[in-house]
Image (cartoon, rainbow, N blue to C red; front, side, top):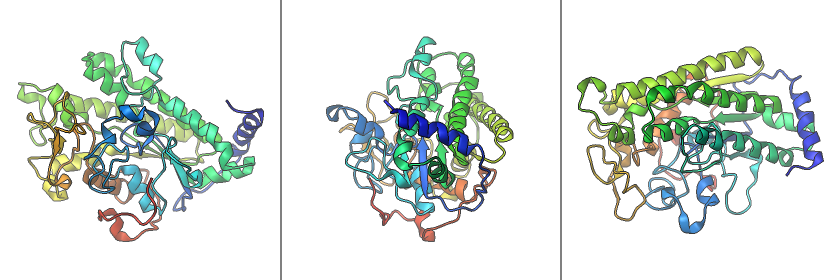
Length: 390
């Protein structure tokens, strides 16, 4: 519950921020604030649930490659958000619901595994049930609003904090579709969710802009048709359903592309509304497609990129009753040669390539002007980062 003073502070920031037209090109970021789902969660879900009912990411072999222990990340190591933080010279983002005391002045992560862009009740009314969490994007933005007064004491101070912060909005929205697909809802009906999901993301962006944000990175969705869980669930006997080069399911990838195109169009509208804000589209889809189209070029084993490293059999090493994290489920010897970690999420190696493609390559539109503040080897090394992780 916010106090009257907090309400007045946030209202003042709205007015003050609307008068600022900052330059964001090549600036140094003092903080990163991240929103999203399991692709960006650095530990919120595992800290929110009953310790006796930890999700899979709370058990080995999660975290085995880099942290050498489970951290709540759904991967064997670092995520895209971790590589972004490393690149700009900031610590790994602590989860908002992390254990112990954390200084959030350099950023915080609100992403929660299982989160959706649309609210829990909204989806449930449409027959789409979320078994993971009801901490939707709207809830996460509210957490940020609640936190903001503790980061700054005046309207100008809050605006200054946000002016020198990078906002990473997602990836979010994938679970809205995932839950519907896994419930076997017709794809024509799922397509009707796309404008609603995109609108929810746009509203969150507007909220943050009105609070003073001026640099917002907005990732699109990954190619669903290349994910082992979808390849298993929607296995087809029709050759025409598959891309002959990648082995991915065409119509599922076309759905991901449809979402991404709608998201890009909405970002164009937002840029016209807020010409002083740098809204950047992160092309996760095509950054990841590099792996499936030319795996050996990027150090992945061609025959393994569509299989899960940590799984329990089947053509894609994904078996829903026996997921990674169960004691009887084993992982591959070399996760760096795989794109998928557990059939739903990526390996650190895949996340590294996506992050590098966004930060240093041509997969950010417009170009993401981030000055580098770290040793050049950091994007390649599996050595522990020098700053304290969570």
